[in-house]
Image (cartoon, rainbow, N blue to C red):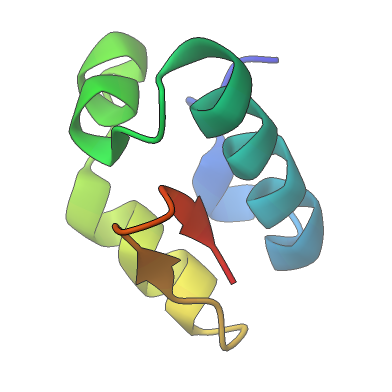
Length: 63
């Protein structure tokens, strides 16, 4: 799944996809995920925060 169009995605679906990728491919490293997909990390955080999701670096997931 390409995250390039994350801004137009449903926030709950986006959170699920991002958490899966963080777990399976990036060891919880949001910086690596953002660089790999060439996306604006702050825009991703803002999009998910709009649905009350927060990135928890200690577990490397959004909750």
